[in-house]
Length: 175
Ligand SMILES: [Zn+2]
Image (spheres, rainbow, N blue to C red):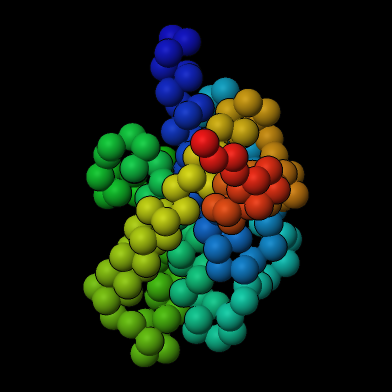
């Protein structure tokens, strides 16, 4: 039982970390994230309409990126298919994605097939390149259960420190 609930917590932590890191990636304000012992997770909204770096249809594509990043991160850590996640723990995200995508299709910016393909390939790339940040947020979330938006940003900043910084600060001794 302990193992099972640990696994649920871990899956939820990576799922919420995926959403949280994707928010920062598209330039949306960071928000609190939390998980609970039942394996449920929550990425808070801002309570306002969706805002990120982009406008118009591009803002909608960025919203889709954030929505799909949770399920993609969870699928990666569980080694399950994305489809399996979208029909179980990711179902809420799946429904929202379909809603947002329907708006884009209605306005002629995508077909259902091209829309899903575009979002999925973009999110897979982001999750791959941001994996260290996702892992850092997930581990902090497992430890604390809840993180503020500022704590999410701090986790990401810690793993994104420029590679040469340690060398500049401490110097390198030779011989
Ligand atoms: Zn989600």
